[in-house]
Length: 74
Image (tube, rainbow, N blue to C red; front, side):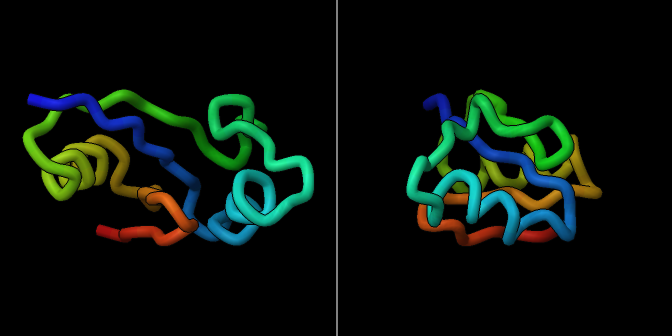
């Protein structure tokens, strides 16, 4: 098993998350993001797809953000 750091973002806040963590000049840390945007979790899984599935089961009302700002919705 590997450990994956996964960003979990409240639905509808994906663009704000991208602006905060990816697009802004200051590029805030995902771990320091405002709590109303989302948070990060460490997930143990064999693959990134498995990690996404685990997070989506735990947080069905949220989007999983990946590198580059892409997101997966269950």
